[in-house]
Image (cartoon, rainbow, N blue to C red; front, side, top):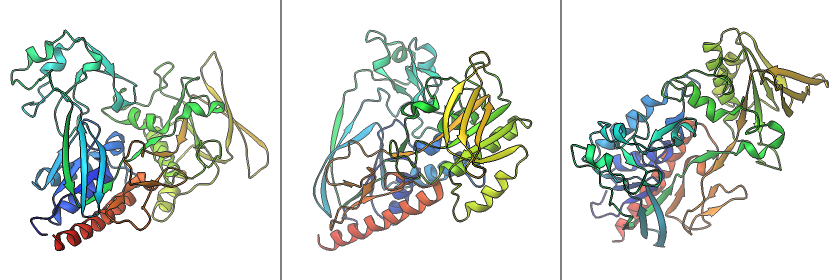
Length: 420
């Protein structure tokens, strides 16, 4: 690559953004990686296991973090958001706003600041199921491994964290900063968020404590989660004796998400293995419209569905009600195969909510389709999308998609460098 070539801007530091950044950098291009959270990893860092191999995501993330750390061509900006993009392909002018971390790179992650911090805040990494101190490390695999001070959660007069830091890393007077860059291409890999299950009123999320979502189960099953890796009923902290997975919770529904999110069936089958490992005698039922596990995931589906005490019911759940005495749930549906009403009782219900693209706040230039996923601007090169911001997909497909986006960005860089 021409040493004078402008860099590629990658927006989003989840698995898609990480992949696009390291692939472009290892091909010889300079990269600016922007992430709005205090650490990289995105949704993948919150998972307990990948499917179909059922291995922890820490290994895949660690490989990418090592590639990133060993490549001086990548500049990482966390707590950062793109404010504006102007110019044209090969010569975009970008402004990035950086929120203060209040901790510098002198931080050794010793934790002294958190030990003396008197204030607490909801732990967004654990989906609000736990709390952290206002001085906190985002999670155990955080990259960069730096603490953050949430000034909105603590008293303005308090400086206990600064007094406790032996390295002078806490800077409570840090302010918002803006930086400008000229880049040749932009890859938007802004990721996804779970659909708000509280909007599906007939399924009881937010009303009944033992109705949870698939994202919550990932955190419950994770060893660094709020329950230390134990899947427990929120109402009483006990292991469930029966679990129902409700597929297409809001998906394939004109009132919520009209599209299929592609990964929910495999995710519920994966989570059924979590339950089986912890509660071997538990009865598991999966209410579904269609089981969609295409390609190489078909074998995973057959293996997971063959587990003992796993029942698949072809029928969309119509209503969930609670037994107020036991806090158990009653799920009602029509069994599409028998034509009869199906009703099952469970100690825990897991809603398989769909993927919603996180495309709000992107500056003008990117276009959205009818479902608000990123779509390529008509006839305009230099702006590319990758991962679940472009279309729903599982991790391996997302990695492939991000690699393709990196290749397109490299071609734009090479063309612009040729004309410099």
